Image (cartoon, rainbow, N blue to C red):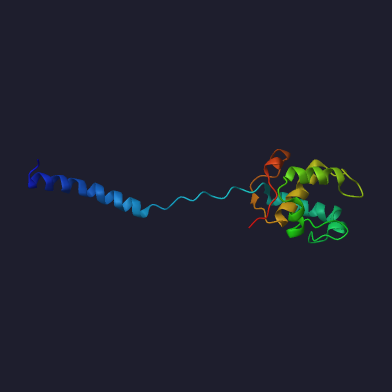
Length: 144
C-alpha cells in the first residue's frame, strides 16, 4: 500500500500524460475516406463531346435526350443500362455505332464518347482517362 504522499506524487506525474491524451482525443478529426476518383478525365469527356456532336447528336439529341435513337442520359438511359457495366455499353456502341458507319470510330474516340456519356450521367471525373481495362469495373447506376 502507498502512503498518501506517494499516491499524490504518482497522480501529479501522470496528470500531464492524462491531459495530453485527453487533448489529443479532443482535437482528433474523424477520418473520412475520400471518394474514389472518377473513371475518366475531364479532358477526355470534352474530347468525347466533340466526337458526340460530330457523330451522335443527329440521332441521340444535343442533350443526349434521344430522338431517332435512345436517350443516353438520365432515367431512360439508366432504365436500360443499370446493372450492366461500361464494358457492355462500350461493346454495344463500338460495334453498332454510329449507325451510318458502325465500328467506324477509333478506340480512343469510342472511349471519349463513353467518358462524355458518363459525365452527362453525373459520374465524377478523375485524374486519368478512361481505358478499356477500367470498363468492366464500372457499374452503370444512378449517381448522386
